Image (cartoon, rainbow, N blue to C red; front, side, top):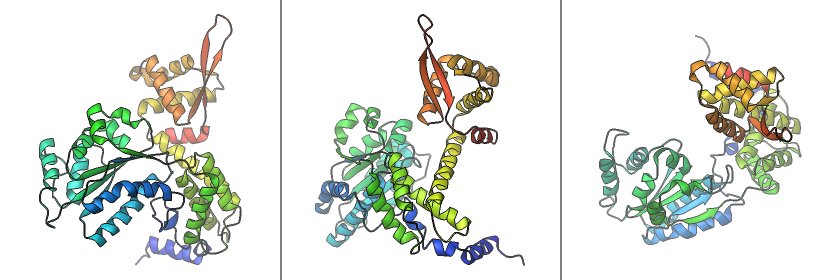
Length: 390
């Protein structure tokens, strides 16, 4: 009988230096919830201040958490959830806190079906009318097996995704349901532009802002996680400061800092190194950026991928890329499937926001007007390889 490939790899890892690098990779995952969330005590306390009413069987205020990616919003809300559930258990109060990631559940129906299922109601994931799913959800709060008043707090993470795809119906339904409180999490301060006035009025939320982490704060976070994740004396002394400094430049993103540290450790394992060094961190940065660019390009709409192919072709020809030249090249690639010249500018803006291209407006001199010059901002070989494997 042939040996099991996974057993073989596990054995190889145990026999290599890898066993001496990592103690446990789990704490380097951004979903890991530590016993203490450093540098977010103030924000957790603010959440708790609004949620404490639930312990008196009063529906808490609605809350919105703002902040860029990797600023601890999700972790803080989950930390507060665990603390509230523990306190409610001790006081014999019936409180439920349900977490919904809006990238996974992108319509009001899907969110309500998921909530019903989590609260013990067997409903289909599709097929009912909106009225049926709303009535079933609301009926949970009229009768429950525990014979107690149920207070439900719904955490809607990345709510802007849901609102952008399906409108504000979910907020209207939840805020108009007795005993339900909503905690919304968004990366964007302007996400309420997606909400109609009547919903904004019933939401009446309290706002908590999560500022980006500074390099010293990121260093504290990484030091705490590294102690749990790595064996002793594995990290050279400049590894954590370097990861922290690099992540501070990425708008204080703790997720990025954790990814850097984890990838640096994995590179050390791959090389049978007995230490994680600053050189591993630098190569980890290249690896992460490579993977990030590849993922972005693969998930772009086909028209934007075609526009990128046009940018690549002109770059390889060492051409100065104006919007006019780019459109001509794009049309050549698209044949009869091309969008309008005006629509191309929307694509250019989107790709610039993603950091794949840059644009610079220059003056051609008196009477000759102004011209947009477009440049590729990612590696040519990486772009070409990714586009031609799609």
